[in-house]
Length: 391
Image (cartoon, rainbow, N blue to C red; front, side, top):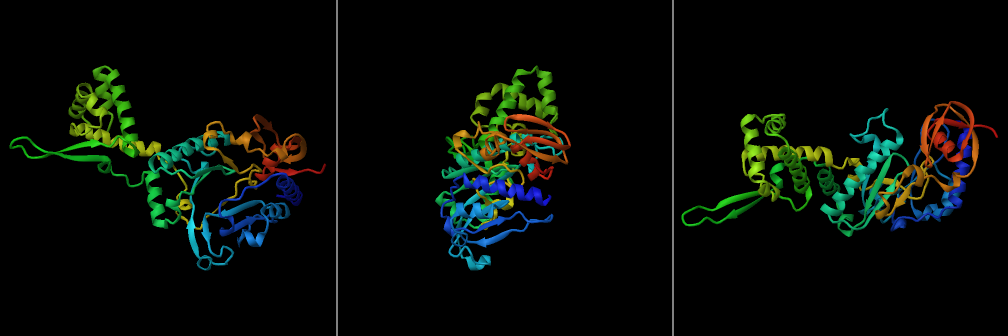
């Protein structure tokens, strides 16, 4: 990036901060603060181990420094400005989740557009929120568009703040479905026998929530598909699963026909073949419904995370808080475009053109000198695809 481009972005970032009121996180004075300035050269140097007391008023700091990136810590400390983590004296930490489109298994890098990547990331976000709200019952959540390739979720329920790394790892494993054992999804109940009969153990899939309910929903959808097929086609469909031959396929189909109500109630252990098929659906459910979070972010009690309201130096988009009931309608490529950069054009030299979806429009940008809407130009400059031209 040329100095003229850096100087322009520095100036326009400052203009944005002059007209934007930033709301700091809770207990801001107990957190470590860090930022990356617009420095020369290919590398980016992090300035960190700063307390809010040291940087002063947050709004004035942002106008004065107009940083490329701004962060605060998930952790809260007695001395957040100390130069070592031990000296900071950790007290507690938010539980933070990071979803990055670049790391999603559903994203094909080099083929999916930026908009498509972000749409897939929002799908993953909604799955994550289902785990956090329905399975764990968390209530104090803040959802943030990162300004770049994904979303952050900050959980601040009192019950999670003092969790250590290993306890946070257990939450990570759950939402990722790591190490999920089908046997753990089975509820066992001893039923007393009559007369001389000995007590028996009844088994049923837990269908009242969690991974059991997710597995059951997919399994029953498959069962209903089977029941709509001709017998030969249904048997072929079942035998497409490894390890299910003609005998097991027939037993499973009979169970679906004769005992669908029992299967609906969770009685998937009615026959060994049915249980084996249900177990396969547990693995399939984990594969398709887990939340593909960036695991180290959640387990790190000292993690620095991007400040909502700040600008992302790699996109010139705003890091935006999103109200829970507004997530479905939120369009990051429209709603995160700063008002500061709307309404006029600037001259740039594009070094890597292509299609750009931004601000509700699609632009086909060619290489070379041209005038573009400023929000498109700043996006391209921040991403290293254009340089500022002299006016």
